[in-house]
Amino acid sequence: MVIGIYPRKSVYRDNSDSVQVQVQMCKDYAGIIYKGQNIEFRIYDKDEGFSGKNTNRPSFREMMRDVKNGSLDAVMVYKLDRISRNVQEFSAMYGVFQEHDVAFISVKESFDTTTPMGRTVMYILAAFAQLERENTSERVADNMLALGRSGKWTGGTLPTGFTSVRHKVGEKEHSFLAVDPDTIGLVKTLYDLILSGCTITRAERYCRDNNIRSSSGHFLGSSQIHNILKNPVYCQNSLEAYYYLKEKGCTLPEKDLFDGTKGLIGYGRTRTTAASYKVQDMDSWIISIGIHEPVIPAPDWIAVQQRLGINKAFRAAKHECGILKGVLRCKCGSRMDIRTYVKNNITFSYYYCARMARQGKQTCNTGYIRIEEVEEAFLSQLRTIRLKPSIIELRQPEKELDKKAIQSELHTLETSIKNLTAALTQAMDTAAAGYIIKQISDLDAQKSSLESSLHKAEMQALAARSLEDIRKDIYTSICYLLDNFDTISFSGKNELIRKIVKNCILDTETKELRIIF
Image (cartoon, rainbow, N blue to C red):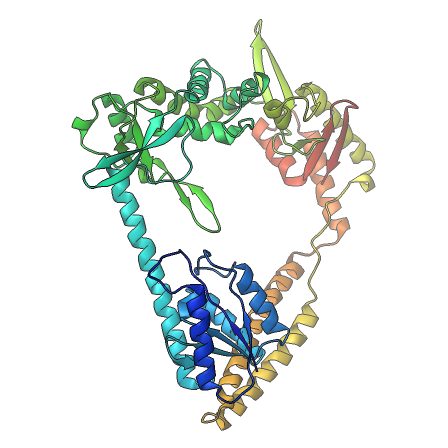
């Protein structure tokens, strides 16, 4: 009999059960319940330091591979939460064990899954293990929030221009932020650039042209610059800041603490999970007073926030130009943005590569090209298409699902479920009942997936049209645009083009424009 032993220890503590102790206790327990049998042990003990909240652990994955290839007869753990603390993941793991006839045994809880009671207890204990982990996470979050409200640094990536220092408060030492004189100059430069009228894109280009890099040695991207400019950690704790942040809905300490002598710290600015990263609105921020010196005067910090808020809307509202906005792409794949300026009462507008503007011509050698040139080339192609509709280049349609095949497979599944349900009524009091229920559950999951595919296939069939029909509609829209070009509003032209055109790819060197519908 081959038994896989899975020990794990999240954090090293002298008073906890070591990996070696867990292995020995599993071996002793196996000697008792499988007395007289020839036992071979396989130890999966390389996950020390990994958390049990998910299954992304090297030894765990190795063990599951051995389960699937039929190398194990049983898996033993010292305690249930050593292998998993998530009910959903544990259930999926146990389903694999059942599929390959592998028993699961826990020493501490004294049960195995070869009995109905053992399986029931297993699910109950897994649920409690998950509940304990979630409660622990909530307690940690509450403690971090309490530290944050008191101005302490709760850890994570340090803000640019800061370092952390340790100070004793009462009987304990805590971390606090402190301005780093060697790196804070970068932050001040960015604020000066924005206050002088630069956009974030121009600030990014300025840093690249002047070889200004982050502490990691990389050039700053526009999103990094934006995060630095939005961070209240640089702002002076004056009354101007208090009233601005209060208006934005932030949670603030007492107004009397805003005396202009210290900097601020913002908590709850982002929400990070295993699957996503989201920037929270300001009304979710919690602001506290730090012990560090202020970096940016409050009026300047507020002016930058207001500038960030109006830049994009201001540019969009000031000039109505660029009917290909949203569909025009550079040959490098980046979007083509629009830049407009007025000289001697004459307006000049250009398309330019957003990547080139941010990272320089060493990454993309596309230059600036007058909007009139690009749009005349676009309209010229539309006039050619009007004379010869067959040259319309269509996007590749989504592959259609086989509706009849799905319906046939669904019918087979429903028949199998019906037969298993009839068999279950005859085997309720036998050991086979659990396996039948598991099979029904698996087939039901497959049925739900197939029903979803069938719905998609039906929607595809409902919306399906021949390529000639699609080409005819595009041709009709092109003719309408050309015939009414002078009377359609700017937004109307852009909306119609975005409706029928997937991409326009521009090569500024050859002046070639490729239209994909």
